[in-house]
Length: 404
Image 1 (tube, rainbow, N blue to C red):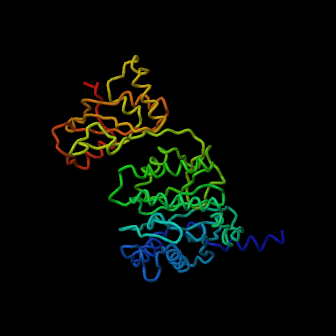
Image 2 (cartoon, rainbow, N blue to C red):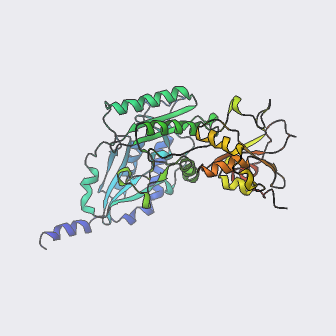
Image 3 (cartoon, rainbow, N blue to C red):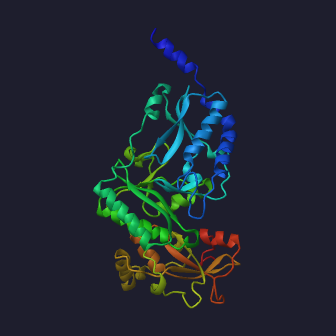
């Protein structure tokens, strides 16, 4: 008991983590100030920081605010091969991370980062996460951490770098792409971003598909940390889940792939996943013409599409057309989009094309199929929809064709 008394009194002198909540607005304001002072040119260059980011400067600002409020048992720590800097503090309740996740205000990887425009920080941007319930284990989280990136001269690391470069050459629509092998052996997608003018055209899916093929060929797990601004979180999760990734939690948690500072998703190699091979360009036939698509393509489950159409007769579910479609999907041969003809004013499906495609896709376990929300031949070009029309199309909130 005599040896324990000094340790117990030391813990009692520590601040409580509850002292952080009242100053979150002040912490956010300090981060906002550093962000506002960060000026990059059109190439993402700053005279002082070069192409680097500002996470270390924000961490320093957080420390200054904490010290101002007499919270002194904290310090900045770098991780992920110096890709991010955050604050770790010792409190009565344990060891805590205090951070503004870099994904909120910058994108990139390694030592090349670009500023996200027009970000407004608030208290929700201040993340507080307990790393350990024992406050005496501070040194385990502040000592130099093991590098999360495998040696740079590793043969596989070089192959990944070649993959990254080949994808950038093949897809000039890429704004930022950063891939590397982590020390846990997974192929980590550190950053992937498509240029704004090329988004919503399927390039992101194509690039992920190429990365998946590389991972399968080399028997690699793919891992990523899908951080986005809060309003985009659900959409980003849905995107990666449609590509075969799972959240690293619950029964599917893999502790080797976990990160104490952010949530992760992963995909294991060798999973026989099939994606809908959407025809594009000259391969596309349906509802194409000199004016292009007369509507909007959205992705939905095969069940959702079939629910909105008249039922397909059982005798047609295994006919020659279905067998041919199954062969094409299994061999990734291009197939036209499915179609829903919609009366926009009545929010009702009035026609369809693609029940065979949806039925075969469901049979093969394809999670999402592309559906053209077609508004009729009276339009010579894509109609000018209101925002609520786009939301209606994205969610496929229509009355089914059979609903009189």
